[in-house]
Length: 234
Image (cartoon, rainbow, N blue to C red; front, side):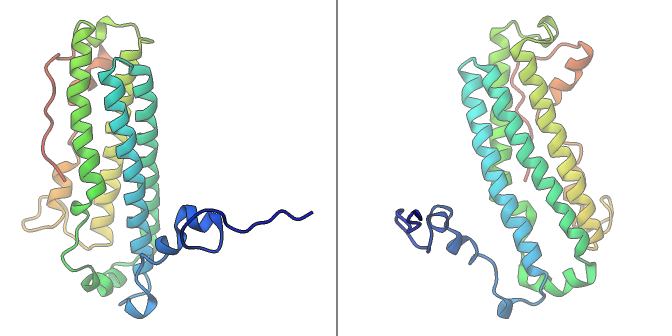
């Protein structure tokens, strides 16, 4: 006997999948063909809109990791941070789509972007803010453990959390490098250091780390107890 597939959830959509995922709204968020200056606007919007969704997830996992670190649960915090790191890896990987966007095509569609810039990403700004908060909370947590990572066993949960934080920093760095390369190749920007180049801001951020004080820990150097404030960034 065939099971009734009629939707039972409230909302728009012909199926419960459409209603729960809100696919009607989601798939209407891109410019219609009649509005496009170039067909690759769809590619451009899908990459960036999906990036915002992954960054929303990354921020949620980071925020939860901050909470677990503050509650002296570094094991749970490390697991949550690994999820956030994977989200940014997926954001990085999807930049491969821009290999199919030529500089000429991008220039054609650029007027549609107005003064828009990736530096205005709300998802990344929130994730960066929470990352700095994690650095401060971790320093407070480490202080309760004596203030030195090198005094902890390699399997200690606090040390494992530090490794997860380093992995987050490294993945963000890889994302920035890929983004910088896209800006040079597709955007036609001059390399960082060139006067007036729009790539200067991206180039400046390539060496930024949220938790630079943790990197020497792998060689046994002390990690300062004072919270690292980080630097303001897009």
